[in-house]
Amino acid sequence: MYLNGQLIFDDSHFQDHHECGVPVQVYWGKVHHDIGFVEQFSPSYIKMNNIFYSRKQFTFVSRPGY
Image (cartoon, rainbow, N blue to C red; front, top):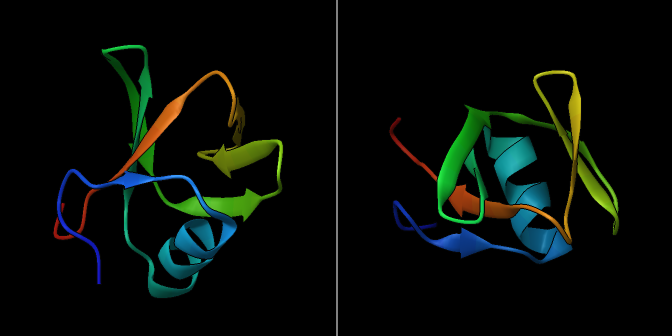
């Protein structure tokens, strides 16, 4: 499905991760900020660990097998 470390950015990527329970790691620039499972998503944000992350401000990385 996705490679460990692969950037995810399309709605279909977030939908796949949500449906399959694949963890997503969140970066702010090059700094690790959080890791968890996608609870909700929209064109503007991703909700993980009960926190809303801006899709414009943060980078999201697939972490299958984490």
